[in-house]
Image (cartoon, rainbow, N blue to C red):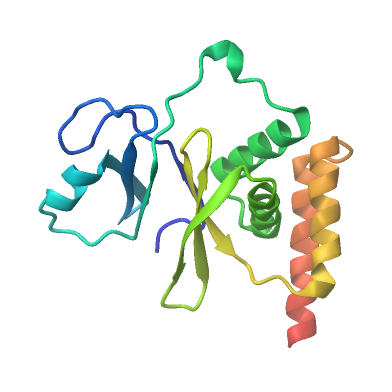
Length: 189
């Protein structure tokens, strides 16, 4: 199975014909599962539909291509940018102890209209992988849904707040998350 979460940036040229994607143009996006994660393909909708493939996409969706804004227009409100940056950072670390924090951050950014859920895939082992796309940058995120219990949600929310506010380090939150996970596993036995 590929990693539990992953980020893939949107391309600015069609993966099939090589022509530049145009602002506000319909685009087909797909993820292909590979040994170490996912490859992302962005293409003109017609090119995607007409292309012959010898592989089955992990996830496919259609959207609208948004050209990157000029560098000075990229300023976002601090809270959203911080949550967005934290999600990227945690996805790059691939720390299994942070799976609950990654999921809550993704849901928080979805509710804040930063991310949009594009697909949900159930794996052979029953885990759910959710495919999110950043509305502005077009990056795709594959996030494992840990199926949090309601009684554990408060603890995870506190961990997210601690990371966003800077009151705890990533190492402190990760250690606390591992400890909580061990307690839950012992309670289930």
